[in-house]
Image (tube, rainbow, N blue to C red):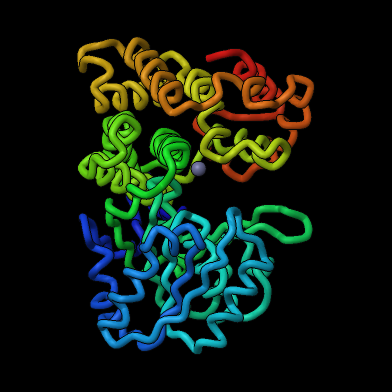
Length: 396
Ligand SMILES: [Zn+2]
């Protein structure tokens, strides 16, 4: 995150995970863990990843490097404080000195949360917010098996309160993984629906981070290249799931979008999506996707900076010639994104997603309380959220 006291235009980019990218890089896990001085690792994953054989290969690589491995394979979607506590206990029992998060964003978040409590004590609630982690944490190696959240590149741990179901975002540079292994082969095993919704989530991270109030020269670079990679490869991985080149572009795009969020945060589509998930169980990627066209149109005020940035993204994706006026190029961006959403099977409206129009006032009130709303390039109050939800209730 940039330091507020810096002069305008200056950027202070915090430390990043080391990125190890390429087919078969999971096999480097043991050597990388040994470089970190690890003797005993906790592999945090879920039963699907174990069944796909990825956890076994990770264990083999670690054991070859002389590292003892304990496996916590009970990760659940949207991990809560109970999950994190169970994982922390597994780490205590195995006396580990390294965490490995292998799986989707939930595996990485569970590992981050358990690491946080193991090294700093207390409860997740104590660290809810920004920069609240006093002690150094154990090293974490993040290995995503979906191209989506970008959690492998972020300093945030997202954990739900097991009692209130409130999602708590704990942000601190100490939470960031030391190394992210990006192995495209690991993403081939995911079901097509997961590829689609996580891919749309990554795409939305690139789009939202590109225009926020917190954007800067470095985050723009990440957002633009993330968008170019994701927009160019989402259809390819849906058409041909074994296309490793396209899988690699998706994985890199999601990681780059994760780096962009670190600098510039997210915007209106995420603010709208969270209440759709909390109140109607709409899967995160679908909830963000169903809102995206309305938010893009809302932000693309004629003559605004957001409009010209959207225009640049349309050019980067090859959806608009460089010579097009900004308004036409921004419109081409909305069209291109809508085509991708259709191809990914995202509901065409919130009504299609099972959300009644009568819920709009309650949803709008909840969206206005979302932290990400403040970073949207255009002010968003309850009235603005009502118009966004109203627009998204119509087929895009
Ligand atoms: Zn997201």
